[in-house]
Length: 549
Image (cartoon, rainbow, N blue to C red; front, side, top):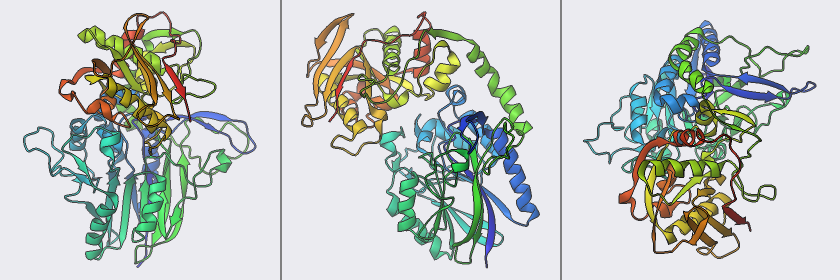
């Protein structure tokens, strides 16, 4: 028999509980800027959808595509606590673990998962090698469906549905899971799990995937027994978004080999809403839905609002929790001005013709890291930071603690000291740039491009691998530059993410790792301490000389 399910979904919220600013360019109207989304409006919309489904004798499923951690001042200050509080109110029927859930290691993720009362899915997460004596264990968490128990059964209207999750197998390269936590291959995991599911006669199979849209298309083609994929990771937008002046990556749902794929942007800006009719074999026979953006302001034009805009009041319970538990500290930070900018400072990840030294902001972040490390432990030779850890340009005017911890450096990752040979530092710089520019390797994205303090370097893309860093110098005293000696040992500071060798920085993690020392302060903390003593922020002399291929 056929069954109709009302589905709602989102992903990649990154602790944006208040949503984020949006720019719409409606057809026939001028640009419209408004705050959009947020958990309070999402819950109001969910309550309405759940009531509609109940009145029609249907079930409303709400599914989460992962990456609830990181990205906002809420997470910087409260870590997983606020996420757990608010997600319990939204009450997802299931969530897949995203890569940012592992940014701070296993401990904060375990503390977060312990507070949840809904299934969390990651069928390729293997915690079987986890030591039995660690206090915060992934293994055996009652709501976690990992490799040991890879799927969750949900019966809807008498029909069994299997809910299955898959996350990025290269987690160790882009996040910070504990060393004993492993991630199995996608195809082997799905082949095994889908075999078990179908052996039990279940034909309605929903995959929650934190792999990205292109990978989801490949999975749909490879595993046509899937009914539906709820995706995340790439912040993709689907559907007819032209009336709103927004870009789209395909239809909603996007159908591949009879498998429906649904994505819903990022930052809690919108909610994917879709009514799906499944036949007895788990195939989707009919679908009707769209992304629903949730503006805070009323429609400002005389015309009728286009489809895709849903206006609703924020849910009072979530508003009260945010107002009483979390916003007061954030508002205090907004009022604490750290420094000022006389003019704009531009951030971009890679150098280009307009900005041959790349970002104007990232070198300041590296300088703050170096100053904070020296203040805490004394002699530190250099700081090295990846471009992707800096999240925005800076505009003229006051710069508050909230601006720094909430927008500029929202990833709450601690600083780490390490020791490295000179030739390994050169190798790390080359590997990071190769990764960022896909120079002879398939990189993880341009966020790995390095910016420094206390070290300056030149990179030549056309040189053979291993000889692309043509000049590497360090600064033992102000303005005193000396060549970095290949066999000498230097003391550096980076984020724990970079220091662990992610995204091309492999050489940093290869030797002397027994000397690593976590400083107990985050990037934002370091920048606030450093900038507070400066009357204004201005550009620094370029330390990067980059010649692309």
